Image (cartoon, rainbow, N blue to C red; front, side):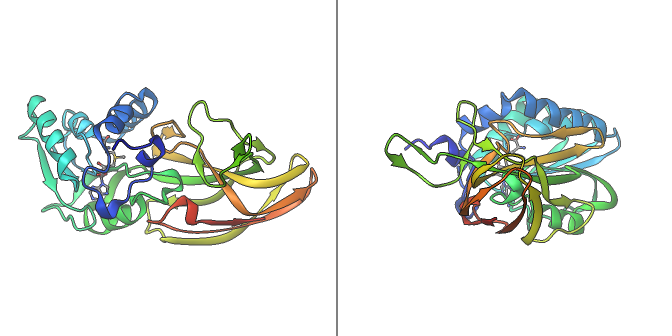
Length: 284
Ligand SMILES: C[S@@+](CC[C@H](N)C(=O)[O-])C[C@H]1O[C@@H](n2cnc3c(N)ncnc32)[C@H](O)[C@@H]1O
């Protein structure tokens, strides 16, 4: 059975085999915003003498790009289906002597030598669903040299509050959804605020609970949050959101609240990584 588009973005990594099908990989490859920015970050980061590592190498596209700009690449992927596809791509590119393709869970991988640079793109919205944070935590300890270069350098999670019609006609469907192109946006009633930041110079926690103050800009009933993530890929290259990577995501709040413009709201938020956006708790 074919998968809905949203399921592309919510893989269950415990059963990851074939989880990201080729149609989603093609969508990611053909997303020029995503591909262009990642290539620009690799250009800015890689040096000809670098030993580089990509964790979650997928189709191999960025390991191939990296191998043309550095000395050696370790490309680690745990899904055997996409790994075989990457192997064909690497052979066709004539790079099998430069790229060591390894089928392993990134969380267990330890290279024979620590690497000068690292690229990990297991990024879902707020990094809740995909294992970006635990994998970066592992890589900082066991893979990357102390002064090594990491892509991304940090990810900042942003939040706006507003009102959303979770339905149409006589049907209500109160759940989170990605705001893909063509999906109606919520009525946004606050500016965008930083909820938390993952700085990949350090180990990051896997459970986050905190409250922040957000002033309402408009009056009305607040019932949803819109989440986005700002990725600092390399010193001068950022990535925000596209349909194929970290699309803005609308999440129902646990409560509804009538507010007046200018009112200062306290937003309480809690979530666990390696879970699902639907499991997060957001209240005003
Ligand atoms: C969003 S895709 C990006 C892949 C790659 N950057 C590309 O452009 O093809 C993330 C990849 O990470 C892999 N992955 C997820 N968890 C992993 C883990 N624990 N160890 C190794 N690979 C993993 C997935 O199978 C998937 O191929």
